Length: 334
Image (cartoon, rainbow, N blue to C red):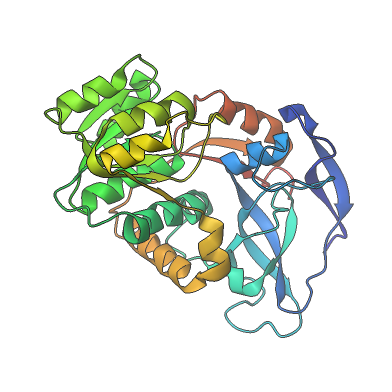
């Protein structure tokens, strides 16, 4: 095996141009770790926030982004046993990042062998987004049967899966997106109704769709004015589940609104489940993998970039034109 690899590093904070392709040493797995020859890497919005140093944790420099990767185990550290053997293709969660690389070390227990029926790209598309959607549905939302829910960014990586999983759990789904094209994608995924939140007073349309009663639950990750109007879409006693703030802008609703309308706001952070409730996270992954293998879950990887094109991948996400999952691939380097 060669001793050098390509890796995308950031030496500074700022625009996508701070992401630079460099050559560095291939790491050696420590005890309990595996060395993975990476095939695909998931690009998530948290990567954008880290690049700008606006993530909820400060990003040290230099830094290598990437918290999820799919690839083949090529070496193992001391104490690592079956099923983590050389030649096994695994999905790897990387809590401390470093995924934008040709090779990466990962804690063995944070890796999941990939069923041969699922290709690397689809696996990358469900690893973070799929478990996020499933855990939100199963552990944060109340029973969805017979309820009306609003899914913001409903054509995105998590939103598109929330639409499908909410429908499977008996909900009526309103998909909210920023363009008519994305609204059409949401309809194709099973949304009963769609709205365009780039238009003013879109929350009134949601109220019209619910006979002025409002929705039971909002799944929200946009922030800013979308967050503000989403709260106006809720019925009294409703719930808003916040799992991100893609716009980087905070909402401006006064706390008294929650009291007056008896609204519950719940937060969701996937890292909490990975670090503290690994069993529940693995259970969620098994569920979405099972649905995917049965053809009951539609997962789209619509934007692929070579590792050296990481800056272009970031630009595509920030442009708000993407739907589904954005991935990097190392096939042009390996």
